[in-house]
Length: 220
Image (cartoon, rainbow, N blue to C red):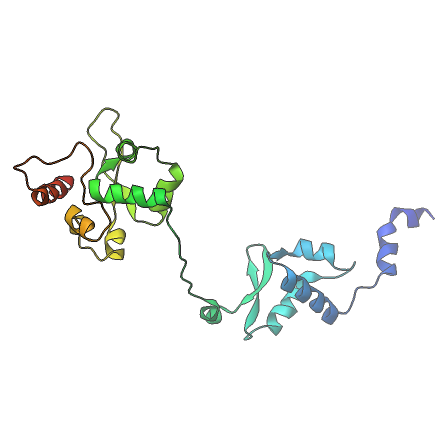
């Protein structure tokens, strides 16, 4: 009686016979197929009936899947069923994601394009409202703007400029190709009436002012 109490695990093993290896393979296959993440041998042992040998079942299962469209692969210390490497191209799908810019993002982008290099404080001064971090982050993520050189003013604030990707998207060779005030007014995007306080004098030419104003925006 004493010897029986000292080795209870031997009695447990004798009461539960492990399933045939073919059945163990099916169990491992089912677990791997249903698992999103790779599964370790220890995790397989915890799920399978007592006495199973998932390590050996993996050897047989891996061999059975050789040359198939999916394979049993080792990922670190775990195992998973994955698409065969040479068929990975079949799983690729190209999609076009359309992202609509908010009005704040459009205004910020326009200010940067026409006034670059420009600081956040200067953008806010022109817009008359603060610029949220999300607006700038969105334009940076789209790679339409980037950080420029720091301005030689107190605090050395960082500036923003448009990118090559922005120019390519809009078919521009450089920022100087952006439409001037004359073109914008002709397209109906700006009022023909100048803003208050900027009325030209009797001897000034509005067209000359618009061209000079644009060139001044892009002086180095």
